[in-house]
Picture 1 (cartoon, rainbow, N blue to C red):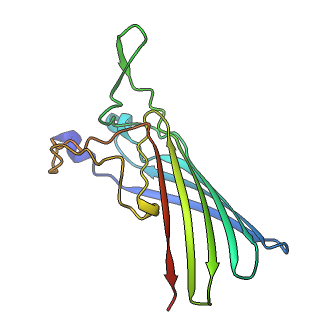
Picture 2 (spheres, rainbow, N blue to C red; picture 1 turned 30 degrees about the vertical axis):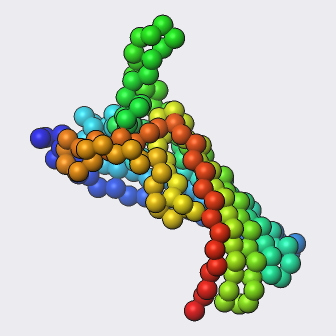
Picture 3 (cartoon, rainbow, N blue to C red; picture 1 turned 90 degrees about the vertical axis):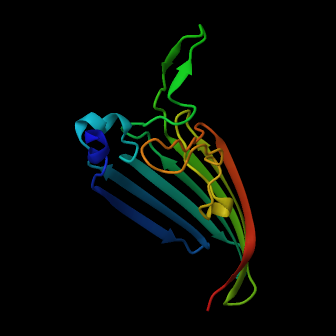
Length: 184
């Protein structure tokens, strides 16, 4: 019960960003972030929320109506890892079990095309792919909208301390989205 109570902890984050638009219609932007969760030392082994992250974006205006956008995000290895459904232990070549490597870093690549029909109406299509490290379980929603795909095999996920969300680590997830955006 003590560890359960200690697991409620304060968190903070810091982010710095810069963006520049060149006269050629090319825009380049970068973000650096630091996330930190203040857990007690006896829970540091499972602290997957303290980490660094980066984002790079390059956009090109092709015509007054058409633009291309590319992005790369990197989540650095976290300080700890609570272990997930398939990452608590790994099997060595000799068949022995070992602890997971805690390689929970991940990369995400994105590409988008936009066409403006008017000042208010834009059609877009985009693709995003997340490449998780062996212990990472970063998720993609459909088109990046938060509907998770790597935890879909939930078993006994009713909540509480004994629940088992069954997230699968180390997966590569790809999402494609297209749609219309209307600005009021």
